Image (cartoon, rainbow, N blue to C red; front, side, top):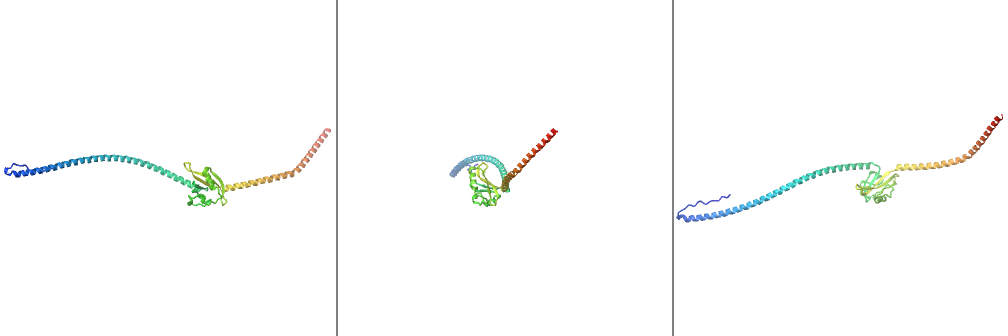
Length: 280
């Protein structure tokens, strides 16, 4: 909307006043032309602004469409994230349950290993200590900080010079090795070395166990001693019986001869009685 000052109407004047009116009209025409020029410039500027406004509006519509598309993608992503979050929550619950079961299993195994009297040492592929039970202290000078150290660095309390050699042999052949060894305190142990296998059946070291067989060894020694004594007693008895049989053989022969003579006399006496009866 434009407001333009319109010039006042021109009234017919007398010829005497004509020249001033002509000058005034010329001035008004100049003002009108300037106003028209300004009006054309304003219209052109308005058209340009209108075109710019249309371009801005189109850009705004395009941006709005992009925003809507982005919003839809965000909503889709949000739904996917919610679904992934639910899956992660379910997996987290499963992991928590699995972890709890593993903790329980580890606690059970630890209690079993710690409650048994069997000394057990776990070694890796380099024969470094991975784990040991408290009963192992009766055979090695070992402390908890020795985990990770080579077994060869420890001082053994048993006469077992073939321990490391047997461990390397088990790693190479994967066949268990069993030996009886005697500790410095006189106790006897049966030492077993077996491969340490992971869940995928991969060998990751060896397991060494020491079971106390002192009572069994003492019982076996006592049985062996009793067996030897029984054998010696049997030999002595056989010798005694042989000697007694030789000593009794002569009297028995004499008794046998006397019995034969007596039997012969009895038969003769009976025969005589029979003949006497027949004669009568």
